[in-house]
Image 1 (spheres, rainbow over the protein chains, first blue to last red):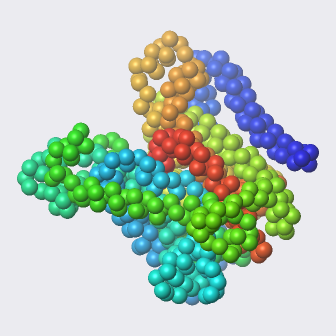
Image 2 (cartoon, one colour):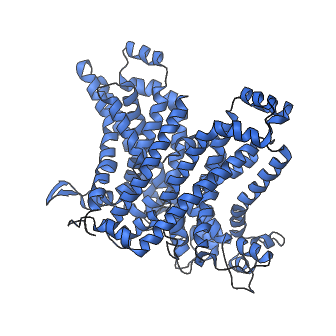
Image 3 (spheres, rainbow over the protein chains, first blue to last red):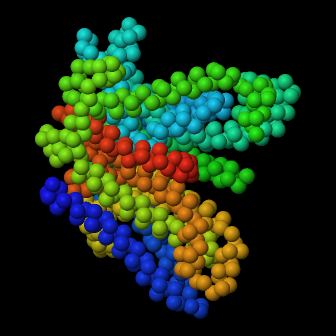
Amino acid sequence: MSNFLSVNVPKFTSAFSAIAIFFIVLGVIFTIAGRANGRKARPIALTIFLGPALILLLAGVVIPGVRTILFSFMNPDSNGWVGFANYQWMIEDPNVKVIMVNTILWILVVPLFTAALGLLLAVMLDRIKHESIPKSLLFMPMAISFVGASIIFKFVYEYNEPGEVQIGLLSAVVKFFGMTPSNWMLSKPLNTFLLMIIYVWTQMGFGMVILSAAIKGVPADIVEASALDGASGWRLFRNITFPMVKGTFIVVLATGVVGALKVFDIVRTMTGGNFSTNVLANEMYSQTFVQFDQGKGSALAVVLFLLVAPILIYNIKSLRKERTH
Amino acid sequence: MAKKLAEHNPGRKIFSSKIATTVVWFVTIIWTIPTLGLLITSFKGEKAILDQAWWTTLLHPSFTFANYKGVFLGDGSESLSAGVLPYFVNSIVITLPATIFPIVIATMAAYALAWIRFRGSDFLFFSIFALQVVPLQMALIPLLLLFTGGAHIGSIAIFPALGIAGKFAGIWLPHTMFALPLAIYLLHNFIAGLPRDLMEAAYVDGANHFTVFRRIVLPLAVPGIASIAIFQFLWVWNDLLVALTFASGTEEVAPINSKLASLVGQYGSGYTQLSAGAFITIAIPLIVFFSLQRYFVRGLLAGSVK
């Protein structure tokens, strides 16, 4: 116990003293700078309010971003130019081909399932009593880290030799229906889809909650008018409800694409990218920190950036539009 | 109003509410079972986990707290000699400053961009806003190099090595940097919407920007700040990439999430460690989720572009 205290008390002390120093410095600066008046007051205030953020953004995002682009044209140790060699490697290497195919699969499958299931549940939640309980249970996995979710599903996907007790839910269900379970994480291409299920499980609630809000926002009089015109059931959904929430649906899809492109934790935790499950973001990490090839790692990061940026720009634009409505 | 209409007008019903109730609860049960399975597994002994599926255990209940004790304080095994407690402490020590620093700095910047107008302030806001599209991966390598070796042009050092790699400060800083674009953008939305009359009355009374920020902006922006802070807290607590890159994986600084990820791949780490360890890791986010659900939802929806 005394050992525990001697190790951990200093850790807490460092955190709390960092926070305390942070606020004391701010307080002192605020007090001193607050005394300034006249023509200098405004520029001083501006520098103090905006300066820290700008320095951190410059040092932490802008300059590193530019350096990563430069590194992508350099050798593993980033001390000599190699032209487009790292990008050429991406086109030619058969392992990268597998990664690209998997990444495309992730982009195609994951957003569609997340958004479609989210929409279905949002529509149905609108129809039931006591919606808050299922809603929060369905949304709960969003609070769980991808690592935590992966371990939860590691137990679901657990496999034992035939004849032994199947302690994994998936294996047990498969056996119950008279089929033979297999070692799921080793069976390609199924394993990639099983990893996708983990992602869909955590992220579906997000689509459901914002689509649910959008459906509740559909004006009642429009629905009423078309119901009087005889629209009902599926036709009402297709002609009225869906067009009204289409914008939100596309935002959910786009968010899913970005998430699928950046997926890292699940693959890293479940398979480490082995057994043909590798994806772009995991390969970026492996090249950089396992193979120590900063050139290839940077090139993969740049590709990730180029893929993610246009979708995010679209997403931010439509979210903004929605907010101003 | 919509609900009332639906009751009076069956035309609105796309699915009858009976089918809807059945489907929703069916999916909810499927969605909850994996977590429930882990929870039950985490209270079983090693042998019971291997010999008996968790749903069978429900029929013959026999539970133990030994896993949690072993995982928390150490079970003498090679993979977890000292337990996850030090990593749990690290997670707290990482997460608190990595939430407070960016939120305070972002609130200040958002105030300046919204209320201290200057030439180019719109352009600057738009630039910060645009930085949201830069993925974390674009900054990892150069930032790590900066922390370990400083920055050079040719052989001239233009920036000294910070020497904070593998220390807590070396994890707080990247989290603070990466959180800023989104936090500034969201807080700007919030702070720019504060009543102009109130702000102007304060300036006319002779209050300077520092006073207005402390006395008016901060108190009024608390709901917005809270939801963004919760989102940032969960983001840092659940993060793996920053932790793997900037914490060396050691007991001194690595957070519990990265320890857990390494346990999965480690030969000899048992089911008891994994199940109890995972539940300890997700307990904090789940507590936050169930107790602050409204803020959580708001923060998550706002921050969904990250």
